[in-house]
Image 1 (cartoon, protein in one colour):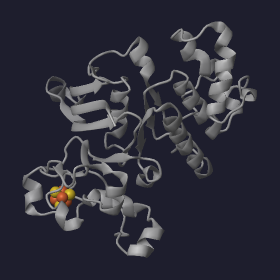
Image 2 (image 1 turned 60 degrees about the vertical axis):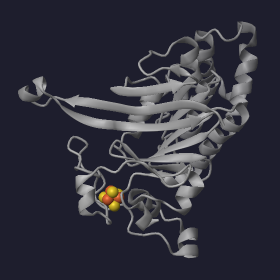
Image 3 (image 1 turned 135 degrees about the horizontal axis):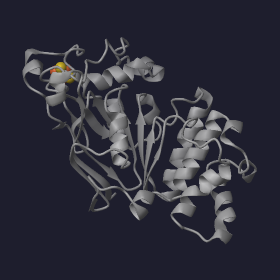
Image 4 (image 1 turned 30 degrees about the horizontal axis):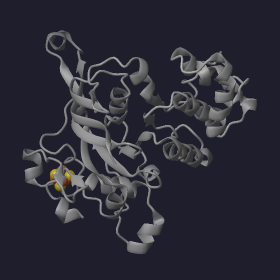
Length: 326
Ligand code: SF4
């Protein structure tokens, strides 16, 4: 597989100015703090972590909707780090947001919403728009009978399908999906997830899937990264991480929603789930940021920040003691 996106040492710091002193010398929330990873062409890549860990900020930066503080983002060989995405590049990178209720203009019909991007980018002559609309609505599991409806006449799952339809209408190469199933009923989550997989298979689109639920990535992701307080703490192929998690935080995420089949089969997971609250990103712990919640923490963890270390060719962990916990 070829690399589509290469992210190096990406940082996003937000200044905090709560008083006069901080006005001149602000503190910083380090929402994304020096992360690096690649996404391959046609890959389903997951980014997993609790709320506030920086995963949505990462998604917004990759979609060109937020400027990073520093680092480098190369898309298909082009450095887009500080570029305002326009024209063809804007079309190639699309985003689907968490809340389909606020993502759609309530005064526009489904057909207008889906075709809006095609018309703005002048991708098709007027005579072919209806044919293309029918094709896109079919791809997302909605028929042409939906084209005249307004968003408030749709269910949550149908609205999210319209959001996906708007994104794929532009035939993107890279699709950032920020918790696209979390505001939906459990019964439709699997259908929307299957829809992203269908798009990946049919169009070869790379899917960057952001979620707080590690089990969401279990079915479709090729690889995923786990993020904690602005840092990537583990990254690898899905099967490697699920069978041999190499970071205590990943183990906690896995046990927070127990996979009962595996628990019964192997008796391996710690069913205590995630312990405590994450510390403030304004004042993260010294050394390893996870040490205040880690059952394996040692004095070394306080003094030295662990780097992502290679465990196998494709599996990396940022834990001093990864080999003791696997
Ligand atoms: Fe826990 Fe130490 Fe590993 Fe951090 S480096 S995850 S504190 S054992």
